[in-house]
Length: 162
Image 1 (cartoon, rainbow, N blue to C red):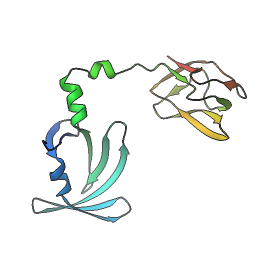
Image 2: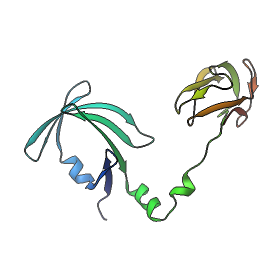
Image 3: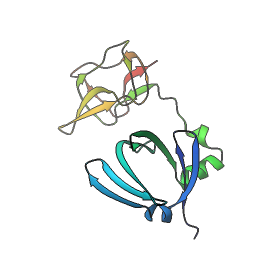
Image 4: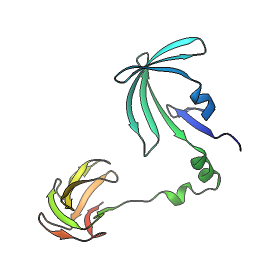
């Protein structure tokens, strides 16, 4: 079986391929916290790990105080791209629906608020647990379809984004 390869884009411009074996062979050591030491091609580097976005497969870090962002495409991403399915997978999310039945405990935004992807928008209690629903995309709140204390069903429209 062919060894998996990954495409890595660094700072959205430099793109290179790397194998899983090459990644495993890197001489990298954890120092403390978010700090790592790397030896690569007889050079040493101090890496400070920043944000990791697993959904987007992005890693933000600095090497010797210079910022870098990497975006990784695995063999599945490359296959989807090769088949031309990227555009079909993109969805324009324009609302927030209840992921499960529950009670609206709090609505953290109001109509007209600008929100960014990942912002806390609403708290839903389900099975005696509080679930914070986050913005699925950047947008502006167009309608709030529920009120505090209201019972909702799975899939029910909660908030509509412009």
